[in-house]
Image 1 (spheres, rainbow, N blue to C red):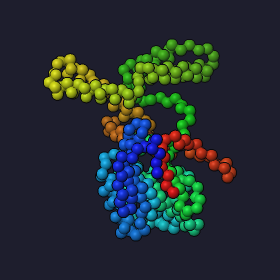
Image 2 (cartoon, rainbow, N blue to C red):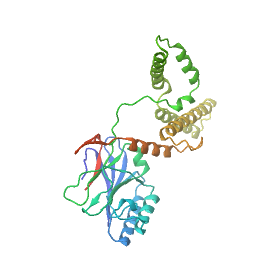
Image 3 (cartoon, rainbow, N blue to C red):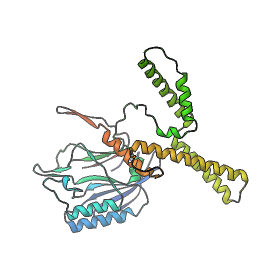
Length: 326
């Protein structure tokens, strides 16, 4: 049922309506859990499914991915001729909310079941925020209906095609000491001849190259900086626990904590810019929220496919593992 060259099954559990498996990725050792479910048609029995999944969810403290035919829609708009929330829909929404799961948008169609007269979206994948953070390019896609009244859907962990990356000014650069003065000095040093518009364009192009080089060689990657500082802080705190309270250790710890605060502030500014959530006041370090919004923007802005008459061209790779629901 899975490619053993990609994931390793560690443990599994079988319920009345679902099968769950704890996996470990072969390439990076990352552990996560998957739950495959088939929902009953009766509302009373479906509530038992939510209770079962909630209980299984508590088995392992790892990122989760759930998928299956739940035999219920999340919203009235996902079912033809249905315009009001039902009790069963409210139970489903409550289940998603209480487990803090993400209902990813469906690419390639609005529904997953049709008998030719009616349609609804009964099948879906739900993922935890930590699972989505590990695969930020995840997308949920509907395939062609063949022999069943259900459309197959699959979860592609590398589904968003990345084209050429255009240069963007990063607001976090402004937190670097002497940044404005450095840019001003660069700008003054550029010498070009021609029309004013040509000189301006040439200066901007030269500035872009200097900023990219400075960002790579001097400013550095925020994640790497944070990891290095956290490791050093942990090491210094270990020395303190051993009774090593030398002045140089305490001074170094203060420096590391100050640098870590600066890096965390830069990280917050970076994700705030990517998410475009400018309504939050400065100091609200909701980095996880910014991750979600930025990833959501990327999914919404991505072009998954183009249609030319009856021909559809997809722009997605499947180099990473993906799950399919039939």
